Length: 54
Figure 1 (spheres, rainbow, N blue to C red):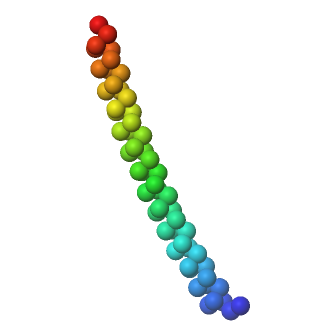
Figure 2 (cartoon, rainbow, N blue to C red):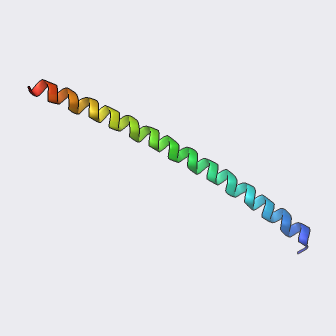
Figure 3 (spheres, rainbow, N blue to C red):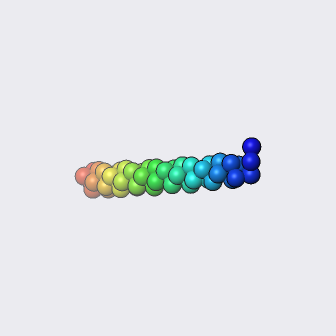
């Protein structure tokens, strides 16, 4: 295997890793947003139920 082949291979792998990282961080942000909206809904529900109990 020549040096240029090796360097091409490494370049391709680096690109793949970058793509995977981008996808993972996108997914993580998506999950954070969903979690936040669940927490907002939950706190809205609990504040409503506190008010109705009085």
